[in-house]
Image (cartoon, rainbow, N blue to C red; front, side, top):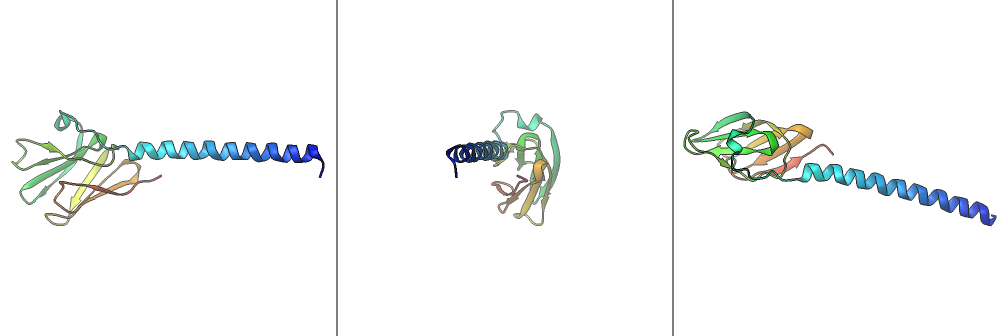
Length: 126
């Protein structure tokens, strides 16, 4: 193999490697958006809330920016719960007083096993 062919092959290999690294960085930044946790907001109860369910004596509602709010006093006051995503949540469903799921944009699925007080992310569409 001549030196010029080797240099040309090396240049193509470097270009391919650079493209792969750029593509990998784009995917990582897209996943970072999904990995952002919901921010605790002082007026979260005034945000767009899209679904809710009565869970025993508790109310659990979900909405934009990954907000999940819980009321222990029939909706007179609300406490925002920490959530591992900030995408809009559109539905919440409990099968008993403890076990429930919330789902939303980007195919996010969350699970709780303590009545909505803590949430874990099960799935998000990469």
